[in-house]
Each structure stands twice: as C-alpha cells, then as structure tokens.
Image (cartoon, rainbow, N blue to C red; front, top):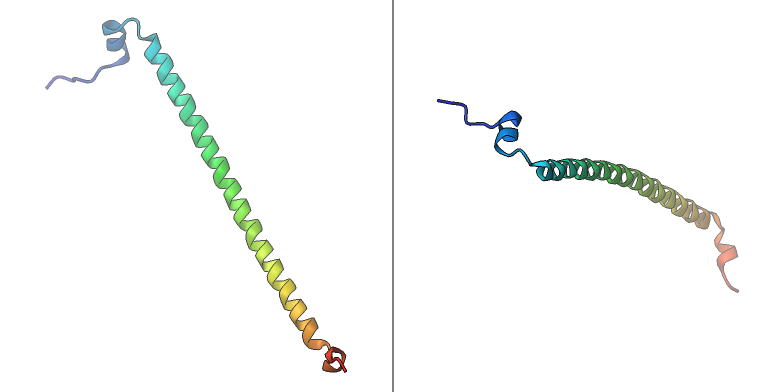
Amino acid sequence: MPDSRLHDGDLNQQFPDHSGADQASATVHSNLHTARSQIQQVRQLLTEAEKELKESKAEESERLQLETQEEEEIPEAYLRED
C-alpha cells in the first residue's frame, strides 16, 4: 500500500503559495506556547497563595489559642463586677 501521507516537499509542490497557512500555524504555535507559559505561572501563583493561606490560618489559630490561654489565666476576682 502506498504511503498516502503528505510531506513538506509534496505540500510545496501541490500548494506553492501556502505562506498564509505557514503564518497561521506559526501564530497558533506561538499562542499555544504563551498559553502554556501563562498556565504554568498561574499554577505557581496558586501554589504560593495556598501556602500563604495555610500559614495565615496557622498563625490565626495560634493567636486565638494564646488569647484563650491568657483569658483563662486571669483570676476570676478581676473579672467580677462588685
């Protein structure tokens, strides 16, 4: 069975003026590369944001625990209104 795939040389012979298609293909490849790069940047930012949120939640939890401990340490005599 003969090879029915077209090669670049075949395309140039059959469609000698396909510079518009070449330009469109180059543009698509460039846009695809840009999109992939942007996706990678967004993923990195998301990872950093999740890490910062986790740290912030841990700090808030620690702060609340300290406040609770401090409130428990205050003698009740100081809290009563006579």
